Length: 271
Image (cartoon, rainbow, N blue to C red; front, top):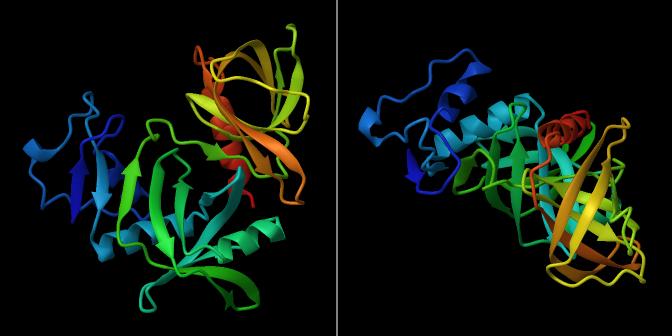
């Protein structure tokens, strides 16, 4: 059973998209048309409670080896991909991430809020518990208990796509201004970005406007944006070194932002 949740930026078409991969006919027989959010109004996300539906969705995402990610605190972002679902064992499996310290943090967490992005840009979020080491054939993996609920939405309002540490997405901030600095971007969305600022000399206050910031992708693509600082807080890197985690809002949405978000979804899929 799925229950419409009255939040912005979502449509009912996701049930059809999920079925496309297996050439299935979406099962909408239990919902009458009057209960569906109109395509243009985008009035609600979908919250799934049914274990059968949750397993079906996760299985489809695992077949596509979709990227899975989680914020572990202190600016640390875990990124990997979902591998398979064991319905009889009430669990699902994900691959280890590229950074052993983050794998250890994940395994030491009582619960984790995951985000999965499919190849059409749909966002799924859920809370999983009971992480443990496991093995599939010869591959070491991480298992979690199946989630009790799963939320499907288009963007968050605009959920962030965490950028793996081995993907070099950089931001040269305030390049033509008085406080130019370079940072590593940790996550990006249609409304803003998060970054790690490693220089101890950079001290910014909430509300600071940075003009003409140049965001650079690994393939050389760039986009220019004006950023407003929403927060900055001390953080610790995986190796123990101090840094600052900052969140910025795009004052005006850059024209190339769709391409940048899709670029890093694709890169995560290749893991």
